[in-house]
Length: 119
Image: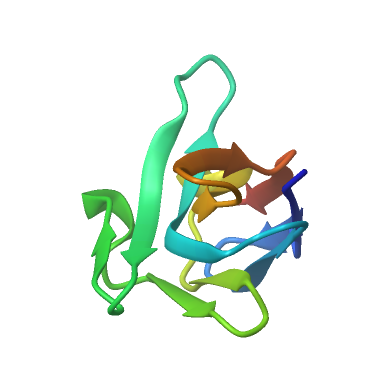
C-alpha cells in the first residue's frame, strides 16, 4: 500500500514563507509525476503546481513567481517552497503522486496539511 504524508504546514504572516514536504512510502517501482493541490473553505480542490519526470514543472497563475516545486526521486519526496505568502493562499494543501506500485500507474493522495496566512 502506498502512503503519502505531508508536513510543513502552519500559521504564517503575509509575506512570509513556508516549505511543504511530502514523503511517499510503500511498494513503489517508479513515480511519474508529483503535484500539490489546495482546497480553501467553500472552494473546490485546485492544482497549485506539478512536476513530472524530466523535471518539467507547471504552476497555477496565482502562484507563479512565488512558489517553487521540486522533487527528490531517491527519497521519494516532493517539496513546495512557498514565498511571499498571501492570505488568499490559506487552504489545506494536498500532495499527489502518480505511482507505479504494480503493473500500472495509479494516483495517490496525502491527507493534507493546513496552511494559514494571516494579514
